[in-house]
Length: 127
Image (tube, rainbow, N blue to C red; front, side):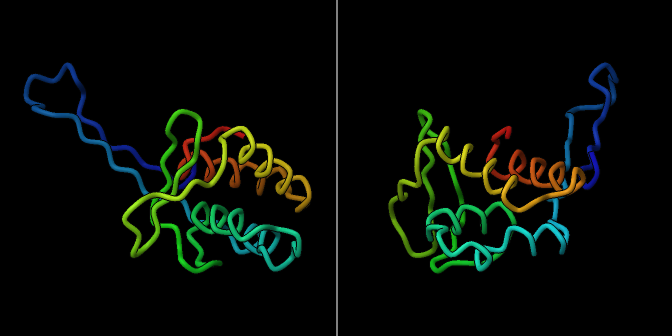
């Protein structure tokens, strides 16, 4: 997959004491960022804009989400200065909203693949 690299030592190599894997974070293309920019969607909630900012590595809201975890099909976010996570929504609802945004944005097949890869990398969700 473009943007991802893996470096591994073969498991059957007796001189390899451990396997290493390195991932390079994907960065969204300018065309994708332009199409999914929350400013283009006046009815987008701040919560969804924050999730989208996390996926794209953009600071579209304050506070910025630092980490998102999924626990029991519920999405929780940690933001700077907070001691406890915030409820963002149920995973099926967030997934549907991410899909709908991709359709509404009119993404090209390449942009859709990029959007899916970002969502999978950052949220561990398959669209």
